[in-house]
Length: 106
Image 1 (tube, rainbow, N blue to C red):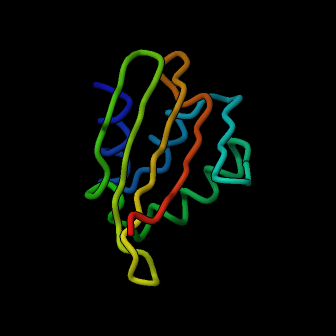
Image 2 (cartoon, rainbow, N blue to C red):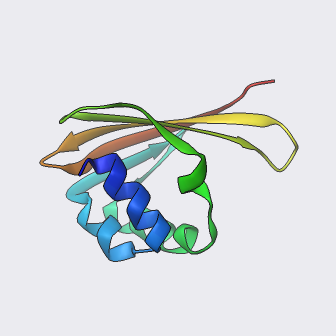
């Protein structure tokens, strides 16, 4: 099963343990101009996973053994259509480095 499929299944099942297992011990997350380490990122995911439909809106743009690119389109709190691109480096089948950038489409 691919990293993308494992991620989507973890979100469907609200399984934080599965998400923890998908993140390398040296994981770093960059979101626009901020970043977090593995512990901080997983703490945020633990809250986010409880009440999200992210997994229904996200698609895999590209995946191989080293890279995963996901894209999500949504309407933000101001009614603007927003696209979020999530680009991850994969190491040993786990997220190693991830960067997310969101942009308005309108």
